[in-house]
Image (cartoon, rainbow, N blue to C red; front, top):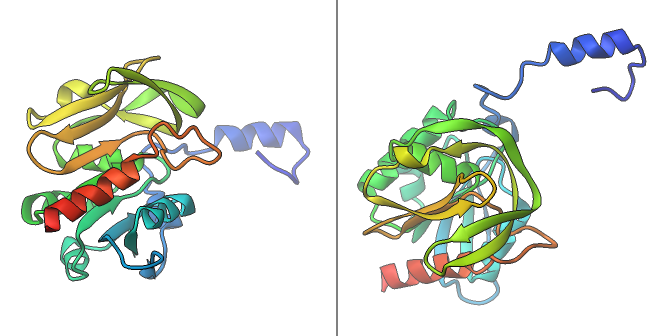
Length: 234
């Protein structure tokens, strides 16, 4: 609560007065101020526009390692501004807090889904924003998923994966529209851990595949995204 205040009663009052995270737009407090570009070594396989809602440096690094040229844009970037950069794919990043107040990001994702025939990939907050853009509902978890030992079931492979997670909100599985397929569920509480579009190259996951030092069970998804973009532009 404090590193300077020593009065116990004052600390209790400060804790009680905390407004919490629900309903607050925290992405604009942590997003980049200006667009910047990170280039891979050698020729790029694909060009990604990455929306920064609080993007982790290692996510950018992983995209670059997968051979992508990454243009990181502020959270409030519009669909038209993103498309003017001529991307091969759109990435929606992680970020703090409640996704529901980020109306600008949800609207942008909706517009990109409707007008841009491009692969899209969301992680954590980006996964939730993508879900909201498709009309899904978000709920506050009773117990947030924290730490590097979250077990999930990957339905396509019938494998159990260990993941790193840090989120307090989730997508209601029964609120997802028919064109979306749940790809992963948390084994502790059943939370939706991933979904994909049944016909288009759009997918998202709740965990952090870039986590360092790990686990790395979902690390391959960065290369998968790059391959989707390459195939889509071929």
